[in-house]
Length: 324
Image (cartoon, rainbow, N blue to C red; front, side, top):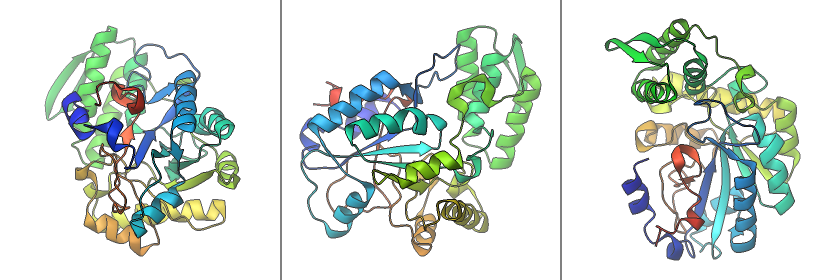
């Protein structure tokens, strides 16, 4: 995110968070050391950082469950002072192995939005496949068809990082079919078959681990589509299918209905009213975005704003002295 957009969206944070709800957005928490450009985005923050942040939340804030958030949205009743909700997107194994024990230790509730299609598999998200291939290749240069034919130098750390960012940016504007083609080209050009064995941070949660999280009253499980599908890019019938199948798969394995969801990517361009209408139709009561900001009482539970932590260098907002 651009620094100016972040600062303007959270202007007056330290005063506003007294009355407005803060929803923190995490992806992973890691205890492993990364090599090269693996986890360069800091999608997975360190266990030490996470523990410090959750201790701060416990000692200085009012942690809410996602059900409490929905209640205040529906009724318009004021949030308790310094209200905060903890959320995780995607469904990485380290959510269970590292994040959940820290949250239990401090008795801070959280909601985990998981991509149901990758649970208990070695499937990787496309961004991680690109990162893995470019990070691990011994090639000095790769060639791809991005519009026209484009070559990328990938011999040094800086070259790998530049190539990764440019290819990711291009793919985010593509259809799913085109994106899959580009990923296949990267695999072929780098001569690397991406896999979760390259890093613990790529590993996904298992069904048994998710069931254990679900049984803990501190935690709530929600859907995040099947494979991190951007919903607005899809034909209506495909959009309906990926939402319904993700909810059904979670419901079947957890043995209860699922009423929570979050939009993959989560910016304004990635979901629309058709998506929201369908979510409501199938019983979803809340689906936060990834648009940065805070939430006053009575906010629409399908347009809640969140503050990403770690990813792309986003700081823990409570300790960010720029947010006057």
